[in-house]
Image (tube, rainbow, N blue to C red; front, top):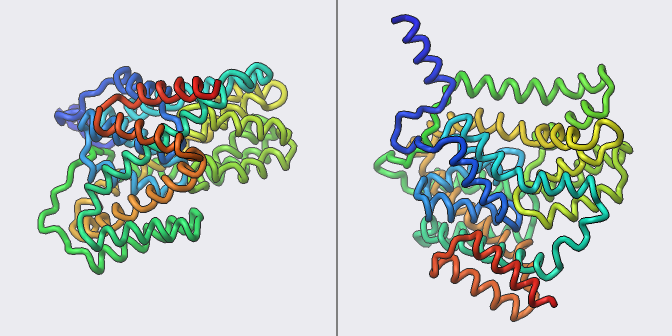
Length: 415
């Protein structure tokens, strides 16, 4: 009896509960779902959040808009790749630790493999994707982000104050761009929500089904901090290109807010300025990263494969990729249990109502810059984007089909 009680206690503190009706996705099922997203999710982190919302809120109904946007809001506060962290959180909610691994593998594997192959055979990549096809992918990314902004605005900008907060957040970020400004906007929105938003009478929220104990969460946070401060010391004590690269990518994944575009200058300082990789190879890989689906942080796999000697190749790709994303797992595992408890309190719900409206504003700003400014250049592009938007929102076509169609049409129009 005692042994049974201890076993049950360990399961409740270190695993996601699988006794709720929603916890019914196996590892392979989640992997295939996210693999399809990893093969078709072009356009960067903001577009990825749009693809996720379409798949898991509108199509599968795994979450309502409130639960999904609360998860997005949390990941906006965490360093690292926000879209990948949202995917890890979704996998964690649906399938526990293995579910989070399945979600990350499926979403990350396609771009990581493509970039590794590109690094190993650089001269064969130039004509693999036409300029027109890439432009078509950028246009459909604009349609996906517009769909996400449209749907989330209908859910979270329901009165004049929330619409005003959304518009103000968008305007401030467009006028004063920057990751620090984005974080200040979210903090300011939370304060406004506490002061001016009416607290809900009922504390009912759609659960994220996160059952990691606080003790387990603190364990993951401890591991995160130990690695953050311990890896630089280990790299000094045991000089090794592989260990130095692991340290550089782990710190990049731990300290960078704002996604793949922001990690570029930090990695350039860590790798190019130290002579670990030459500037031309670095910039070629970063350009190739824009042409593949999935998270921009898979740029790490290209760098790892390009490292000199035995440190490079497939082993280097795997080492750098894991180092870049391990902080995301640790931070999500550490933060979600506390977040799931906090978001149930009425005051926190009032703050989150304001934060969610601000998040819509931030997505709207991102829709303009860089999504629209890098994709819509003339009336033909706008018409193309509008048709893709209607196909997603009114014809209810699956995103992967719209993505492939737009890439093919873009390639044909460029001939």
